[in-house]
Image (cartoon, rainbow, N blue to C red; front, side, top):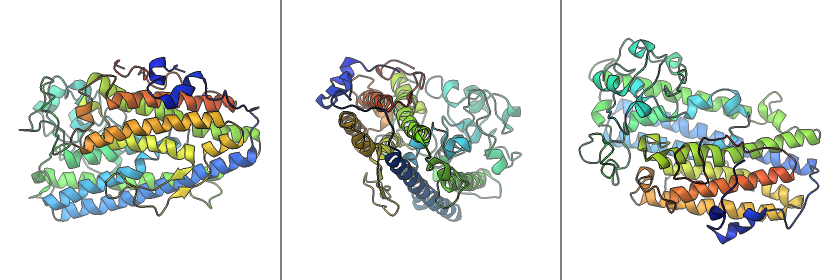
Length: 476
């Protein structure tokens, strides 16, 4: 695994112990306590079911909002649909800690359909392009199975010159579930046409220029961000249909199919975490018969926590965009909601550590107010304490708290008018984005240290990301 730099360790006095190892004040003989491990996995399963249930419920609410937009396309119904999409992300973002461990979201092969990115927006609808932030690397695809350009490559030049040769513009393409299942088939995997981000793109459109919505050429990035009206500004006219199967009507068709598939995929994952089914994933995951079983289940939990922290969140979702100053490479680039992606993914890691799930934020004010499915159980911290590893509990808690301080600064900045695509213009080590990347790296080190003490093996792979998350300013 990657070793954390001394400079990263001394960014906070609370993390000084992490550099020297978190177990110096306590010890363990690595013998697994089966009774306590059982409590951990049951709580972990409870949180998964709760968060996926909230994800299903908010996706259904999104479907209702999209139906209202189709029935009566107004500024108000468009804004309501956008709000419903933002709310639907609040519980889902907390579920991503269940990836990377062969749990249902991965084993059912639906994660790519749910949340894959970057999106193949040029396959879906018209786009504006240029040679910098909206060029081949950002909007192009090497091939596709959607029937666009003879299933061939879509370059930025082609997309600009053929703004009707896409799923929305080409009436020969049937918009149905089969179409949306032909996603992530190209070698570069940029041909994503389903899931949350496909809906996001159709609701917001590209995040272009704040003044006349012409695209940035790379020299005007200070203008190519929306600091007052964040995200893209797709016009309401794009949703006002005048004849059957026109572009607006096809956008509504696409949204209907996309949200139905989103709900179905979420329900499939939710069902695998439900109690009372002896044949589903939860039944197997919560069955511990011996120490090997317990070690396997604890390894799965820590692998999800560590890989999401360092490889996926710090590296793929933050450093790639930060080090290259590419707003198109941010996770929710159309809605400027990346600050919430970061918060919620990091919160998911904390949920597993503390054995708790507070619910989700339905008002988008930063506080969880829907607590119907809240969980307060037995976490990794409780287990480590009970087996005598109090030193690791202390250092990991400090690391998670530092990460929370840093991602809260990103969130506060976004709410004050400077979203993630503004922050990445300042690619310095003092940026809250850089500090969050570094602290995510630090907490992944401690997650691995806990695994080492429990004799679980590697839970954070060296090559989890192509990014050096010890040095966020280096390109990946």
